[in-house]
Image (cartoon, rainbow, N blue to C red; front, side):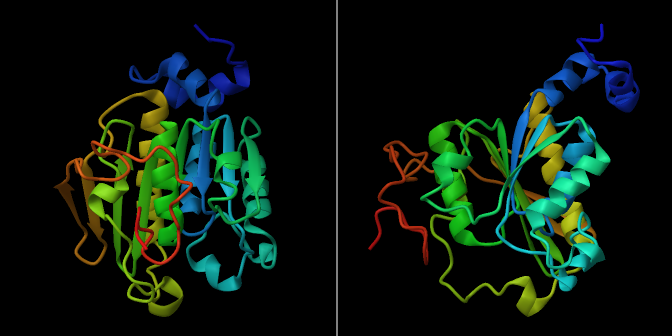
Length: 270
């Protein structure tokens, strides 16, 4: 059963189609899916690359930055000729060259409380490949209210962490009720980052996104996965929904209107 897959698609996705857990039905599901990737940098690059290769039908890409030469050590969808080009444009060109089945919707902007409701709704899965806490908390809060799952990842020097946030499960605020004080967590421009690290972490995020679309396997729900590249170790730490969480607890907020996504991103804080 081809489920409207043409001969080229049957060939391109043959290694998916012959798998019992995917098959032609699963591949058609991927081709009909919409995934939003927030960030087209170190984490977003492998996410975009592998989701495009897998045949996700529509990839949304949010990023307000341009390609810098220092990005090229880890941001593998951009090349030397893209320096100075908006990352969303470079990402779209990369996807077009890789897989013509995939449409790219670009948003050359930073995701904020003012535009999140214009960008995120309508996507089946969100991949949080951002590099700042306000965006992470904004995505967590808004997607929880909208019922959209998130594949989250973060990196630091030689380390990465990942979790998957789904409706009904614990949210990012159950792990981290508030963001650390500004300036207490340095970024990669200050401390550096191992170039291959985001490749490993981003590939796991892409895997989680594909599983969510296919409704297959066990996502990293209620589990925080730590990766240490220096030790080449993986450790999983379970966590639970906090009944006092202001977003997914017993008395959750019904809007992000009064949440300020600056400093510690507190709900109901001063």
